[in-house]
Length: 228
Picture 1 (cartoon, rainbow, N blue to C red):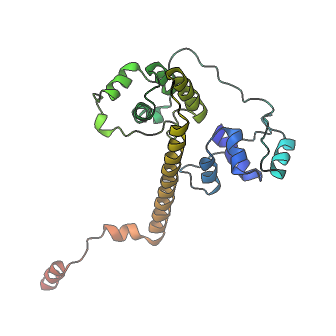
Picture 2: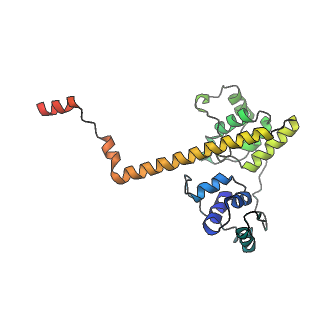
C-alpha cells in the first residue's frame, strides 16, 4: 500500500518527493523512480483521501510549503498477524537467502530471532548461510531485504536501532555510509532496467532480434556458397 499510495500522490498532486516519501514511509529515490517511470512494474494508484488517511486540506498545505510535513488523518487498516513467522509471497521466497546474507554481513549485531521475525525464516537457514553450508550458497548474493520487498525500511531501522542499543554500538556513521551505498546501487539498478527496456523496445521495433539470430556471412562461407 505504501508504494501504491506514493504512485497516486505522484500522479495526482504537486507534493515534493521528500514529502511523499516521508508520508508513505519509503525511500525518496523510489518516489523519484516512480515519477521518471524507471520502476520495473507500474503500481496501481491508491487514493489516500478516499481511504480517509489524508485530507485535501493537508495536500494543499503541503503543495504550498515544501517543508510542510503531511499529517495522517488515520492509520491504514492493520492486518493482524498471527503468531509464527512472517508470511512471504511465493514469488519472493527465493530472495530470502539474499536478504539474510545482507543482514549477516551488514548488521551482525541483529540476533537470529530478530532476523526470523523480520524476514520470516528459520534459525537453521540463518546458521547455514552464516556457516556457508547452505545448499545454494554459491548462488546467494547479499541484497538489501527492503529492496527485495521482504520487509519495510521502518521495520528494518527499528530492529537495527534496538540491536545496536542493546550491543552498545553507535551506528550513526555506518548508517550514513550504508545510505550512500544503497542509494548508488539503487540508481544504477534503475538505470540498467530503463536502458534494457529501451533496448528491447527498439530492437523489437526495428526487427533487430531477427537480424541478430541470422548467421554472420564470412569470407569462407561466401566462397563456399559461390563455389556451389
